[in-house]
Image (cartoon, rainbow, N blue to C red; front, side, top):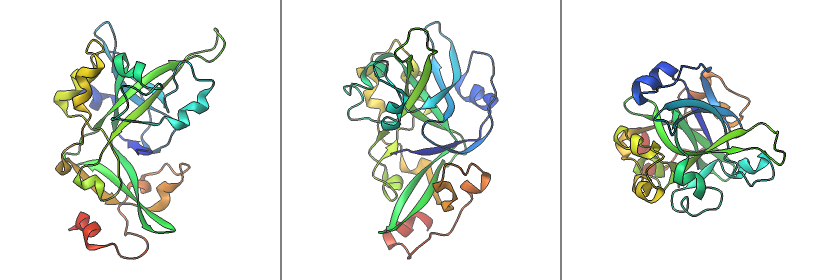
Length: 240
């Protein structure tokens, strides 16, 4: 599962990495983005334009009754994304990138405590998460459209598995163009939905401040000692 992330980059940085073609927009840095909140995504349009847009996290398909549906669809599993009713249409033509500076996962330490870890790229660049987007209008024709997105997850690589049993799909630069191209059929990009090499990720334990989505401050990503009993030697290899 990928349930929290950060975005500390600017439009200019995304333009350099992803060759954006639409006018720039601005957003504040975020240290603790949570489901139902708005975050930047990147998508290709039918007229060969590549834009960044601000969408709500939690994909809501057109047939859903209300936006609450999105709380169940913040993630889509790579194994079923092509066939699951909520995602299969978007998987064909509405694929996107969710650029993040890093993402959080929680490791169970004791029966009553979990330790948050912050995953970033070892190269210092934003991670390009594979995602899908949709547009939802509700039951009235004159209702404004609400655009939403989900993050696709897969089985973990060696680094991520020491913290959680899932990880987001992280695309390399060569895969981004193919993933975003709306003219490439869904079955032709399924092979991209695989774990990233473990050496590309750096997990660091951080403060439990991030546990509450109300806390959206730089201290959320500050390294912290692991709370609770000392971890096993297998778990401790993250810090050797």
